[in-house]
Image 1 (cartoon, one colour):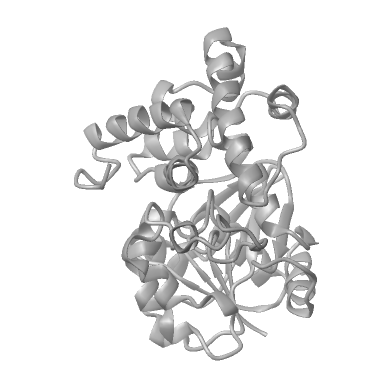
Image 2 (cartoon, rainbow, N blue to C red):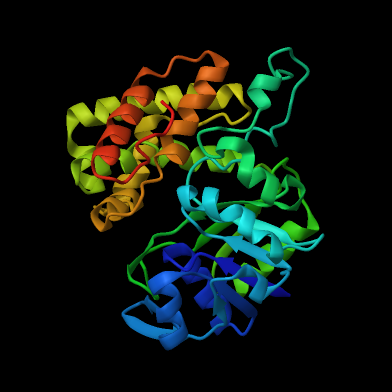
Length: 338
């Protein structure tokens, strides 16, 4: 199996590095300082107090790597919008595309199960999400029939180009966008397991995606706004109450699109609290001056709620405040639609 990883940052670098060290035929698509660092030193993986090196072919041009059997896409949402058309040389008719990204993916509404109701049949509800794929550029480049969904339940960071530091967690959930079991889901899980990941097949990946979103949709932007670690966010009673309101709104939206939440907000916060205080990925991006993934985490929920007519005042406020902060710091496009 030929495997390529697009984006050799934190998650992409961890996946590519581990698979390369396991002896699989993996290559990477990267650019700039990351490309130069991996060409010179390989990927340097820091895990368990040790650093190991993983060598793999890398390029900035998809045409040099050619068609792949498995394509792991680990770019940030804003970067994928620009990069997606250039990924076509990596695809053949049976390539499996696995986006390992945060938040609501561009295909999320197109793949949903549609019960026989007037609302479910609404073309407006099923239309591509403008928040994460304006103009449908990603959907045009990466066909839905070739996708598998993925939820990443681990922490890692890239303190410098070509270096990946693993924190905690090994879990990757993989499944068909429309749900149900499949051989290709099982095959991809077996490949990821060779890299030391706890890879789980899912028969309802949309529900798994929404559940993770429900848990980090609030902590990520609040951490970027305040600079606070997760423990300090959860300990503030006013912020705590605000988060519960936003989570209740997201749960109401999820229930309408086939992604019900069985936990309470308090129960989900207790899970986060067990992890201790840490900097979220969005806070790490804000500190590093990288574009923030606001739309995939908050903007998409705001958009879906609007299509359904579900009121989301807390989510709307969180989106507006985080987006304004990011625009003022040059971390979000100034001309983006409101």
